[in-house]
Image 1 (cartoon, rainbow, N blue to C red):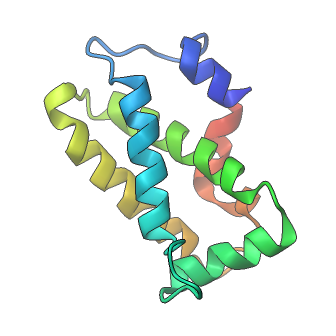
Image 2 (cartoon, rainbow, N blue to C red):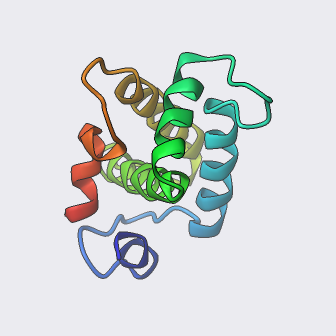
Length: 121
């Protein structure tokens, strides 16, 4: 539902300069593949290992993390009052925030991520 709301911008604020939705989706997918080290046989990073644990417990973990990431990116786009020229800055900020959240000590499931609450907004 959250992803559909983003696609149609049915809820929340709209930006004066909207980001290219399809391009954002491709970039988020690529960013997650890199950040989670999904191309490796075994994750070489703590973030990747943490995600692998969530994936073992929930086969929809990537889908959930994708939606969380998209909502986080949208939220940052709006708070930064970004324009198309700021797209890379927003993506880097989104990645930093997501990595920080995935490394929290008390994280037992993706629903514990602080950004998870964005899905209900």
